[in-house]
Each structure stands twice: as C-alpha cells, then as structure tokens.
Image (tube, rainbow, N blue to C red; front, side, top):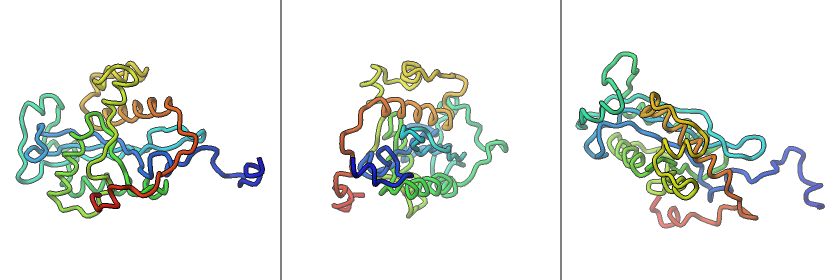
Length: 228
C-alpha cells in the first residue's frame, strides 16, 4: 500500500510495452508480392502497424506506415499473383518508390515506435508471418539496409494464435470469428490485411491474462549470442 501511495500521479497503472513481450515491440506487417519465392519474386507493397497501448493499457493498432514498391531489378513477377492482388505495376496512381525508399518508409516510423516504448527492437506480427518476414529480409539484403529494426527470425504468427483462440487459421474466417468483420473487396491490400491482422492480434492478446509480474526476462539469448 505504501508503494502505491508514493507512486507518481502520472505513473501508468498497467505493464508498459517494454515489459510485455521481453522488450520486443510487436509490429504487424503485411506484404503483397509478385509470387511466393522471396528470393526471386518482387516485393510490390508493404504496410506496417506498430502495436500501441491505450489509456487503459489495452493493446491497440497504431498508425499505419505504407509503401507501394516498384519491382526491384533482378526480381520477377508471376502474372497469376497480380490477378489475386489487382496490382497494376507502373500505374501512375500507385505512387511507386524504389525498394530502399519503401523500406525507409516502414523502418523510420517503426524505429521511432520502438524508441517511444523503450523496447529493444521490433518483432514482426503477421498472418503466415514467415512469408512476410522472408520478403522483408530479402529486400533488406538486396539494398544492404543497415537499420532494419526487426528481429531477423522470430515472429508472432496470428495463424497459430487464431487457431488456438478461435479454431480458425484463414485470416478472413479468424477475423469474422473475432467479431471484426471482413470485406472481400478490400482484401489483398497490404493496408487492409495488416489492419485486420493487427485487430486480430490485439483481440487475442487482450483476452489473455498477463503474468503477475511481467518483465523482459533478462537478456535476449538471440542477441546475446550475436544471432540478432
């Protein structure tokens, strides 16, 4: 009781983000691509949404960062993928940027969010997250980007989370099971898919009770061994 009475008036009454996920900041990422092979096919669109805390300490989607990306030199596009996404390469309204600029449009606000919450780095949240991470890492390697804020291999996958929480693994069905709705006309847009994935992640995580003493759990063994 004494500690509570002596706490600053503006002290949060909830666990800060830096202590929620071992020092990682969850950032939802969705990519639209020219195929399934991250080493051969082009990255065409990317959206990222840092997860924030509202005034009650609940997880909520933050601001969306987004970029349309011109196919990088040496990458290819499977025409069937464009039939699914509806992307029109080179259309003037797409506002395409080169791959380096597209990554900066994502990484700069993500790094700012990581700093804001006192976290060590970002961890990618995605639906089939390793697909998104694979394309992100391939683009980073192509442009030799040195300031990638994301963990290179660890992810939070909403396929697994939704399978446990709702018995659904398809994003549209999981979103509907969570009461979030689904607009098939908006699907396969990186922004819409990222926002629905962010809402799904928050719905599941907010329903899960926090440990009595949440914390970082000490040094990250990945970074301690140099793997990150």
